[in-house]
Length: 291
Image (cartoon, helix red, strand yellow):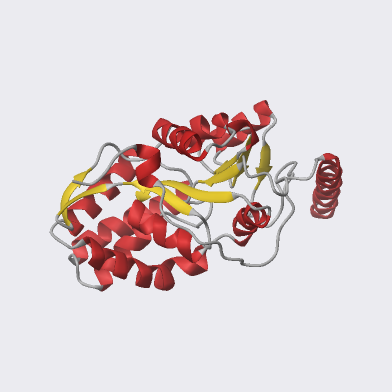
């Protein structure tokens, strides 16, 4: 096929996709439902709400503050580069990153890391929020619904991000602290995979939510258990396995990496950055507490 013919064929397919998406949007009922307080939304963080992994950006900020040496930064840089190229969560890489972070914060005060987290958000994270996903979260807030981040990232980081975005709160991995000082250990397991579904189910029970009316958003096939819990699952910037699963299940898809919709989408893009008083729900959802 000649270059001109190939270009014309690509344009034709793009036009067909746009028309199909427009028809799908027109056929979808309004969602989220205004005033439906029995519903809520649960958003994965890494590569769903934010480009890259929060823990890697946090590591960069800690290095800047001389929490660790150059050789450790090289490891963080490699993990971040791998994540950006692969676009998926690899348990081994993520575990290595968590172990690194735990060893780095050991002996530091919780309040110190919380303050630093605010600064790191401004330095490395604020410009990496996907506007499209932010708009989806805002649509739920505008409808009067609560919106939580659900992530394997440390709950302290997740809480900062949730508050800065005006969300209700965050569920995240809990690092153990004694007398306000990190021990270098976790409380329970990382909030990853099936653990996310467990946390969402517990939070829904505590909040009196109807999961069949709730929505969940993620980029990773690791979050299929969480997505399968709710009546409105969405694949956002999906990895190959999640994209395949979503198409098989007729879940809605949206891909912001290319600036276009990947398949039928029901939620309209909401404008504005409204704020809702928030807090952290990790203790309720996980039924865990720091010693």
